[in-house]
Image 1 (tube, helix red, strand yellow):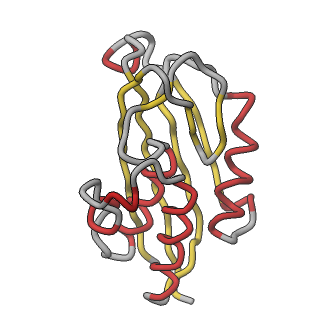
Image 2 (cartoon, helix red, strand yellow):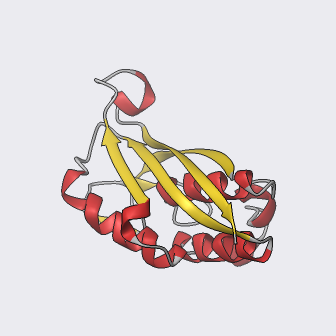
Length: 157
């Protein structure tokens, strides 16, 4: 068994859609990033890569590579799942937290869980997604951006 942790953060910007957990979330702003800036999927990628000792998302999908410009992060997570599979591991579970003052994410949690499970080809009961605010403290509390943490367990195949 191997344990990994991932973290990601992106600032809000105008004129972009907001993607979290592989789904579009209605909001007045999106997140700024080289890809679609899905902080939840990026944190999960980093947790999986870390558990497998494969580096991080920047190593495999660098923002200096234009082939990843505006890429759907579901593609990045799918490729990450393939990488850990090639190294002889399978996902034991994923537990993630999104930190955002707004928008409220509770109505979208189940969709996110299902999307992540589908991409990783695991049962949905191995994926947990939570959302919290920071009580208007810090950059997320001031609605400057969104962050996410993820942990996972990998098992040998």
